[in-house]
Length: 163
Image 1 (cartoon, rainbow, N blue to C red):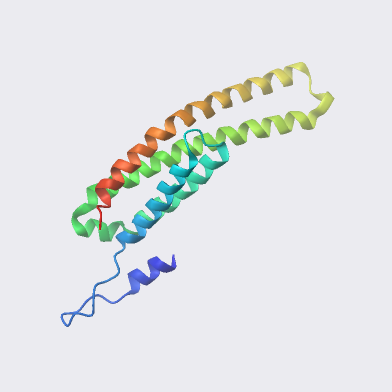
Image 2 (spheres, rainbow, N blue to C red):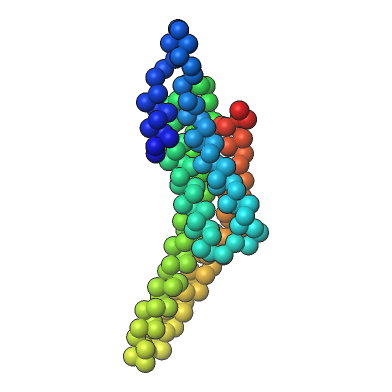
C-alpha cells in the first residue's frame, strides 16, 4: 500500500525533465513474482493450507492490478490487464472453493465429535455423506487449480511484459 501510494503521489514529469513517474506496473509485477515463487515452492501436491496461502497471494495480485488498471489501460494494455484480472479471479474462486470444502469437512467432524454418544446413526450417516461430498469438491478443486494458475501465467506474460 505504501509503494502504491508513493507511486501515485509522485509528481508527473515536467518538460524540464524531473524524471519518470515510478512505474505502477512494477507493483503488479512484484505481486505476480511473489505468487509465482510461492507456487513454485508449493510443489506438485501442496498441502491444503498451502493452497489457501496461494489464494491469499492471488488476492494481493488481483487487488494491486485492480488499483493500477487505469494506468496500465492508458499504456494500451486494457485488454491484457482485464485478462489478468479475470484469470486471477478464477484462480481465487477455485482455491476459495477448495478452502470452503476443507473447512466444511472439518466443521462437520467437529460438530459430530461434539455430539459424542448422543449422535444417532442417522446423524452420523448424514454427517458422513456431507463429509464425503466435501471431499469430492476438495479433490475436484485441487485438480482444477493448476490449469487456473497456468491461465494466470499466460495472462501475466501479456499484461506484464519484461521491463
